[in-house]
Length: 428
Image (cartoon, rainbow, N blue to C red):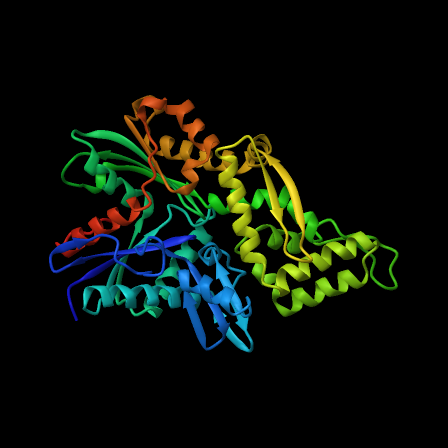
């Protein structure tokens, strides 16, 4: 047993681990040797059967090699605030969400311990400013994370807001005290911190406000499904049940799952799947049946992950181009569409508004105007989306904006938080 402390950036899309060990900070431990960046592990679990699990890059590799049989889970962090989502079933084995997160955290812990050569029972774990806009759901999500961390074998855990951690990392780049806004855009959440940063030292009073919302990269991906692509998979299918004259359309509960990368995998669960089968049998037209057959192919042939990877590529393409072609040519799921950057902007309007409402709330809570903010640092993959950047430029001016992508910013700050803790000072 050692006095070491792990720093874990558990993300919706990617996860990283650092440490405070033997009095020194260790940034970005090699937790995924098969990844292009070994310090970054995709937040993925793949169960070819209930007794075996693969993680990160190996999860994708094994998923492909095993003909996409079994269950692949992505974006499962986004379920944390949902009190109606308890978990899933693998064959006849119940897998709760807490144990799903715990399994992943335990694997990160084991790999970090191997790199450090010691066992570790303390951890600083990043958390979004808000898992949910509902305070009860937000508290419920944090409680689940506490249970998952305990499941993974951690005996003492501090949860540090991710934008605050990013602020610690950006502090290295300033030479005098400034009021700084940090925007951290991940797969599941958009988080903001207003803080007085200075080159050395930290006081809790320096944190002026923290806010955020549970919308970011995945929410932007989902607009392509909700506005267009879901109709290829039965979202607009109509049906009439036997002995009834009522014409019905696919229930919202099904289409909502269909639209989101974290939720669509659960269409495979028995009761939901059987319901969709009944809808197909009762479909009004051949076209309605065809779209549901396409949904069955997407689910049964394990094409959900590659389909949403193609959507994410479309989002990236539209960040650099005025239009792009979406082509998915798997047999039985042939989809061809053309998307424009303007469509993306229009469809993402609600998501964009909610993200910047949380920024406005952060400024208001701090009693700070945009003119008083001296430096704006935005990080994370979604920060690269042009209409996100332009909104920041409009509010704060281009001169204040620092937009280089620091995928390790949150981790760097969590490692610094671990060092604070190691020296007897807690951050939160």
